[in-house]
Length: 62
Image (cartoon, rainbow, N blue to C red; front, side, top):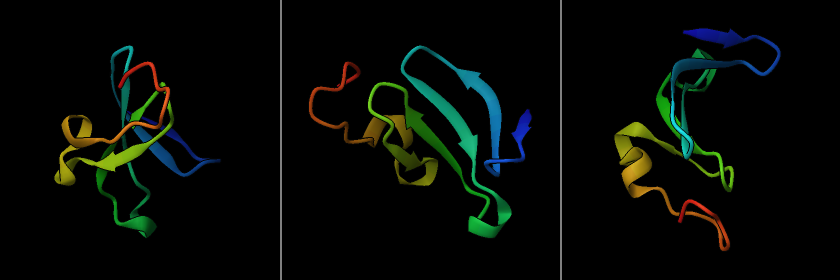
């Protein structure tokens, strides 16, 4: 796991070409979430993560 202190983000180190996996700072709940690298949209893992994320129009990962 790595931490980006300036942004308050923690990365689990699990990535592929489409999504990166992160953990919110504790002040924001400390929940794991995924981010689409194509459009930047994010979704909490407990709400479905990469499987339920709605991509922006024109996203290459849609």
